Image (cartoon, rainbow, N blue to C red; front, top):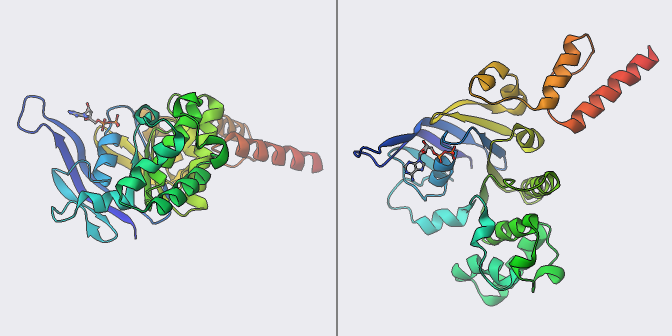
Length: 287
Ligand code: ADP
C-alpha cells in the first residue's frame, strides 16, 4: 500500500510572531517498495515533512494515509505508526548510549515488549542487514567505531524494529566519499533485498542519482517537482532556479552530446558515463 499525502500544510508556532509555514499544500504518493528521495536546500521543509510521515508532528491541515489508515486521525496510536514507519534522524550516532553495540541495537525491539529470544534474533538480523558482522561487533563499544560504522549501528537500531517504511534524514552527512557510498549501498540493499520502502532526505544530487526511484524537489515549503530520476533531471532550468543542479557528470555528457557525440541524455552517475563513453568510442572504432 502506498503512502499518500493529501493537501498537507504545517505551520510552526501558529498565532505567534514566530509563525512559520513549513509545508504548503503537499500532495504526493510513494509506492510500496519504492526508493523516494526528498531533495532541497536547508529550510525547504524536508525534515518537517518526514516527521509528519512517522507521526512525530501532526499536520495543521491535510491527511496522510499509510496502509489506507489516515495517521492524522487522533484515534490512531503513535506506537502503531512507529511500528510501520521507522525514522533515522540526522547524525543518529549521537544517540548511541549503551556500552555494547548489541545492547544499543536491542533497545528498540526490547521496548516493543518482545521476548529476549526474539530481541536477539532481531539484533542479529538487523546487523546483517546493515553490513555489520555480529560476532565481530556485538561486544564492542559504539564509541570504538569509525563514523560510518557508528551510523550503521544507529540505523540497525531502527531496522531491528522491522518497519516496512524506513525514513532517513541525510544519512550520508559528514562522512567521507567512501563512507557515503558504503552507507548508500547498504540502504539500497534494504530496499532491494528486504523490500523496505525507503524515504531519504538529501541535498546531494550526486547521491540522489545513485539510488532514487522517485525524486521530490522541495523549495520554500512546497514540492515543486516530482517524478522518476530522468524526469526530474531533465528539468534543469527549474532545478537551477532553486539553486540545485543535476550531477556534474550529466553536464559533461550533455556537453559532449551538444558537440555531436551520440551520448545518451540521461547519464547521471560516473559509472553510467564511463559505460556510455566507452560505448561511443567502441562504435567510433568500428565505423
Ligand atoms: P529542511 O529539513 O529542508 O532544512 P525544515 O523542515 O527543517 O527544512 O524547516 C522548514 C522551515 O521551518 C524553515 O524555515 C525552518 O526555519 C522552520 N522550522 C523548522 N523547525 C522549526 C521549529 N521547531 N520551530 C519553528 N520553525 C521551524
